[in-house]
Amino acid sequence: EAHSEKSSVDEPHVAELKELPPHLEYAFSEGDDKLPVIIAKDLSVEEKTALIIILKSYKRAIAWKLSDIKGINPEFCTHKILMEEDFEPAVQHQRRVNPKIHDVIKQEVIKLLEAGLIYPISDSPWLSPVHCVLKKGGFTVVENEDN
Image (tube, rainbow, N blue to C red):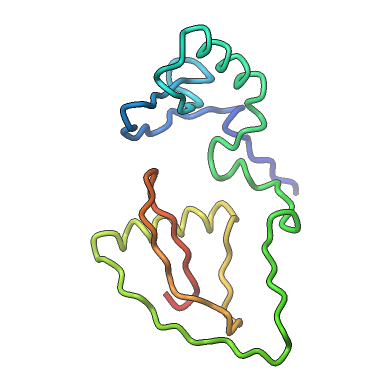
């Protein structure tokens, strides 16, 4: 039985907006509170209007939430490292994670797992520890099965 999940363009949801730097602002491609995009504040009214018109006409090309990305062929975006056959992996121990962000890391990993963007690997000697990097827009997290 085929299951077709509606994209966020078909059923847009009200997004949780985060605080932006002073030179940026939100604009919406759908109504007054749906399909948000971040644009420069110093654009003229004409430039903002033209940008929104373009974004509206190409809104299906934008991934508005993680589940919109599912259709990408893994061969297109999978990174492969060619190694010599006799090369041995180096064991890396788990780095300490600040307890305050541990739950944030867990939620991000669960969100990526549910969207199908990452998957657990339990039988590879090439696993690496969690790397949590604070970015301006949030956290970037990489996790393995042992964490």
